[in-house]
Length: 75
Image 1 (cartoon, rainbow, N blue to C red):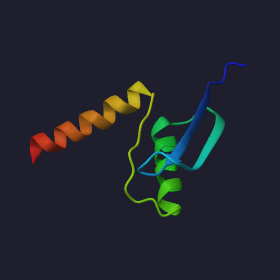
Image 2: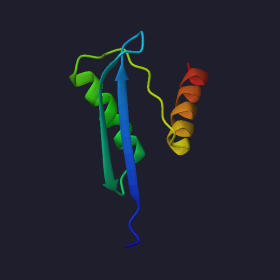
Image 3: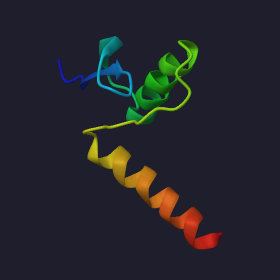
């Protein structure tokens, strides 16, 4: 009915690739940054403090990469 749907999820693996956990959800509307934050919070809450985050949301990747680049340029 005209509502945008967004699917997000994640897989948590250890340093050798063994599956440790995961999550998935289907939401109506939403903010891709909020979902990335939710995934990182999920990891943090389970004690995973050093993570690699990957996304297929090109707009989120662009903003994050640009922010990192601008910070490095300023500092």
